[in-house]
Amino acid sequence: MNGKSKPLDIPKDLPNVIVTGEAMDKELTATVPSALAGSATGMGYTNDCVTLLTMAQYIRNLGYRAYATMNDSALAVPLAVQAGLGEVGRHSLLITPEYGARLRLGKIFTDMPLVHDAPKSFGVKKFCDICNRCARDCPPKAISFAAPSEKTFNRSNLKGVVKWSTDAEKCFKFWTNQNTDCSICIRVCPYNRDYSKWINRAWQKLARGRFRKFALWLDDKFTPRGRTKSGSWWQKK
Image 1 (cartoon, rainbow, N blue to C red):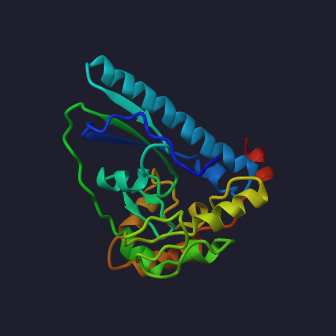
Image 2: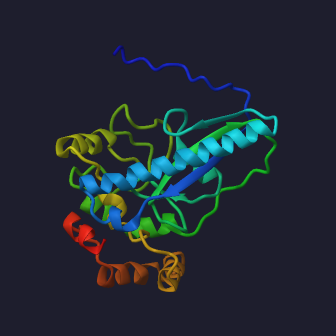
């Protein structure tokens, strides 16, 4: 390894990007950190890959160019924000109104004419300003308690962007030391909910407005955020 990146085989004249997202299973995510929870990540990427390849081939069949990619071409979270899928949380992950941060992202670069979406806000920034749950519960302390800034921790961070940045190298070192995935920040995030239930949709309405402190109190009081043992998950099946 010489530490040099390889050029991407993606033409530079493709003006549009389609961003896709596949939700990870909530019950599996509740077991993080565990090898079992890794299957939620794996299935998320697998399903997203099938969607990307299918869509890309369809676009090609229409006569346009399309390049399906995942984490190897461009930063997915900023593109997802521009596409109006959600907002960035304190843990630097995308938070969406439908799935919280339980989303695996993919991208299709194309020259097919498209109507562009725009960023949307549903109160995540103001809620994360008062909620330090992910920073508090991160074992390697890779998530900052500070306000968004240009501060970088190491070469794994973007320079010159005002945002919440995590110390990715601390995070990944923790992953490798335990030999399995870690998504504790996703598990403990108050936005990590099943929004098919009306009570969670009502909670989100509180979280996006002036009652966000009350919404945080409700989550602390009534929503279990502790780790579910893998054996308990199997017993339910």
